[in-house]
Image (tube, rainbow over all chains, first blue to last red; front, side):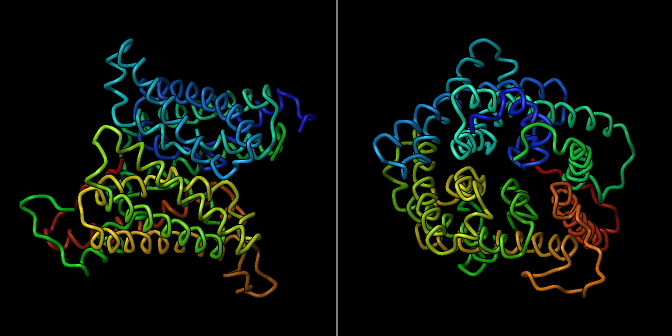
Length: 195
Length: 219
């Protein structure tokens, strides 16, 4: 996997293989927090940070479990490390920005169960990325997640002002919107490193 | 759920809860990532549903058995480790049974760990109920999840490839609606299912109360 350039990996993770819209990872916060623009961006930033930490740790852990031939422990160790990283972010946010901490609410601890974070760790292992490639991949995935979240929040803020039939309101409408966004992102297919 | 003051459900009701009233896919809209990602064909969704159901039943049973031993502060971490253990078991199991399915589902088998349904059930149900009741509820949820996945997967396979379980349905002239097996199709089909349920719901309660109902908003 040494032949793929760092730039290709980044572009692919942000646009062509966007984690939310093309690979269906991290949908719970995507639909849950995308109601308002001013919570969407910080949520994306927090998730990106956790992704970077998770990717860093996963790289070290993977080396360890392969070295000691304990591959069956890989998944368990990944999830424990991610849970601790989220705890760290939570404590930092609570100290430095209590307002934001309250705004994100339940979705902050739920980053642990955000499949996008575990997805980053698992995909970088499966694709045998080098250290630099793995970090770039995590940064790209985080940026892509933030981009999708912000776009969706912008659309939903507009949609709040529109008149929509009762039946369509709620998740059904969000899903249709997400589908349309996903359709738009398909235009990027083939850009970057591909699968 | 054993909320004080609420009537205790019979075992049958507990079982039906997950299949109909609280269906994880259509009513609670939980665990959407694996739902949408693997539901490109009927076979994939069935195997994913069964794998999830297996993890759900085993881990909630264990959580229920040790519910009095685990301190409150570390319960989530404990649940996650239990779930991760069973997911590892399923991961190796599927690899041994069918390599084709394993490759088709890819990383999404391991991602069962972060499926909100399982952690949600462990926290909301298994940690407060005796083992038998938990297993019955988890079975219902697992079957409900599988039904939901199958409903999505079969529609997407029929529209997107003109097949069901790999068997062509419409003859050689059928022009497949490719977008349905691509990512946007997942969003559209699930959205359409929810629309259908919302519509049925609003019609039912609209008839009863004689007024249009507000759309439900999920988290």
